[in-house]
Length: 161
Image (cartoon, rainbow, N blue to C red):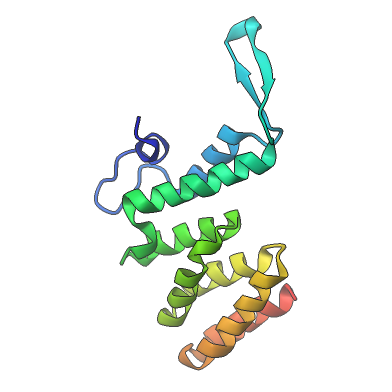
């Protein structure tokens, strides 16, 4: 069974049948927060403890995000709606392999529609490293942004510092 098609469904042009946010929710539901999964149906449900619990679940989420990208090339998309939604998903899941693409995107695009979600995802993470990289990227790309965009990004960075 094709993992990507089972999660996202077939692609019609550039429009997904399910949004990437729904994909994240499906992955969280599939791997469960408790590290347990149910077997059987009806009254015969048994709970079985998975090896490693949440950690293995999030490692699987990262692997499935990479599988989605390998299959649909979402990080290379020319449609910034799709690309930014995917990169936001990758950042919030802790996929560090996509941080280079996030940096390139933030330096290429100046629209607030795309800057706000990416900078917010970078600074909302618990890792200080991602917050520092958000500040560094902004310092390098600041002059290419519109003055209003500069102010909004500065407020995002200040709010989460």
